Length: 338
Image (cartoon, one colour):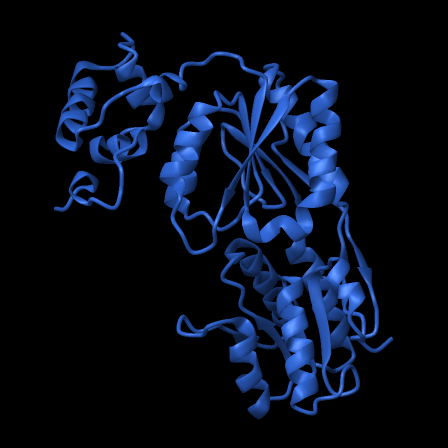
């Protein structure tokens, strides 16, 4: 079996040691810091992994020791900068009240950067983590949870013993939207895939399917974006040359814009022939013509509530409900019939 140490393109990190030994990051940290709470056989496995991989513990690894630093790590994908402005303002306003520093960590789509993220979070001696990203795999999220550091998922419904979440119920929102069309006799509805937001797309599909099932229908309108496609726009341009639909649902603004443009280029009139709804609106969905119908979510409240919850977790307060849902408003604009 090829180990990370044998791959010259990947440097050995504390994450590498944890995976090799089959233990959590916290356990590796305890072994490095010579803690006496680790069982001897576990300690031996970690030490063997350190030797095998050639890992050299340093000041970065020492950062896992639980020392209060007043630093909060905010992890977001670089593709989310369009949305993060108001969320970040909410975070900062509450962070200032409690005298916490927000340290921003960004990830690039399609690149597994968990090694770098873990090391950077350790370096910052973060007391807590706010994660605004649904692109991590379950394995990577498990690694973050093993941190044993309080964490809040932002705009994604996910929680654990060490984490809470503040989210908008996109499944319910799309269910209500879909039901509205089905009640009007319109069932030619499709959902565009979004590989940058897989968890939220899964919720959107669940909402559509729920509505179809309640009407005794089967939903078959999911449009995947092939791996070979250079971009959603390139794929959709070819797709709408041969296909027509009554309602197209996208999660992200850029894909809604792609649908709008490709439909126009292919002579499909919006909204008379095809209606378009973007689940997560932005300033860009208002700048185009026709303006794109979307859901308005309380971005500032997402950030401020997430930070308030995290401060309670850091203070050791007993939090019974670990999932906090915020409301939404559907705004009909020019891309849908009123």
